[in-house]
Length: 497
Image 1 (cartoon, rainbow, N blue to C red):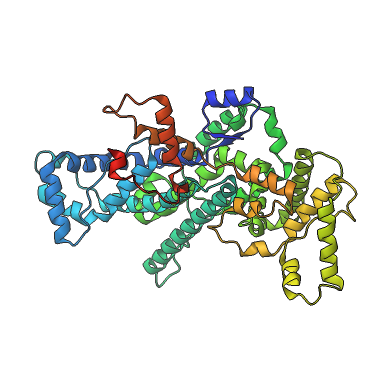
Image 2: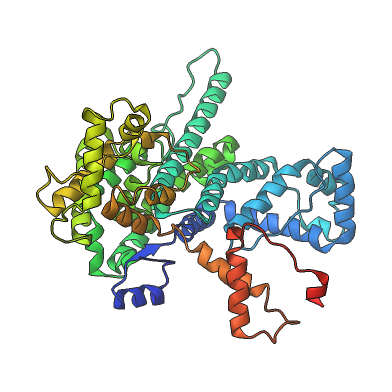
């Protein structure tokens, strides 16, 4: 499996090499957020105005000095405003967050210098725009946290499905909170009479142009081959039941997905949060790359093989499909194990038979007085036996059943390393552990690989261009693996001389 973005040249190379393409989740989330930033009514104009304000303070030294004085007067953090890079949405979020924190200082500065040359071109942001900035930060913050999670060195492919599910759950919570706040405002506005109840059905559905454009883009993407670039090998990872699961996820949140016209949003500024959450939910649900991720079995198998998520996989599936879907995943795991490790029955070695005999003696008669051995034997994973197993596939099936039936795995924490879990079980479940490590060894994003080029850029500069390629490779390797170096002692001065 190769993790990369959705570039046509990369997809073509993977297709010719008959390699499985794993889309980089960071790039996928970037496309979802970029669509939101360009589709939401009024937000592109707001970003232009925000960039104009931030660039004014970045270019003008007197303006930045006066802004710092105002910040100290109002006891605000003396942070400088930053300008974003349109190609990096996380920098756009940072720009909006800095503007929101310095709202009082910026308004004071514009009131004081708004009529002067330079500052007069900035304009004075109305309260509706400041509220839109705050709501945009609320909607974009979960995606920024998700990007950081999948950009860690220890992030693996098993984090993808739970992360997408939690993003949808978080957006649904944002929409619900916004609806409750608007409903309270309506009740306060009509205390004596029954005012109009605010619900998903009572709010106008808004323009259909956005939905039509999304449907057309989705049809074009799927007709061109989607993420796999038309590779027929993708069919091996698609399970028919996942299509119903994806539709179920969309139906579950359909009642809370709302789109409001720009005029209605301007008339009721408090509805911006509900509008933004609804459009972001639509972008996430209708994105063809996210839909393709939900339909690929190896994502679900990786989540099932991760001991941190093993007991939570059923919660990611709708109750009506839960039992049937879990059975299908277990069958798919057994089938993949048999296909990956074909072979005949492995007869137990003399050491294995001796250990099993000693274990039987401890359980039956001779070793009953040794509480420590009985304690370790009780809590250790069950070694797949050979007395009741006739074929190699049945032995692999027993490994899967033992893993799924183990209750001690439920005590794992989110910070635990799933690969370390399977390394400790190589002796008990050899084939199962190898397959799990092979699947969980795939990262969820290509950020770590891209950092290699950033690390090399720190060595090769304009003042250091005589380094050989071997030296650059060694320095980059040390830089990228410095966390594995337990201790480093600098050489003595005599050695350096």
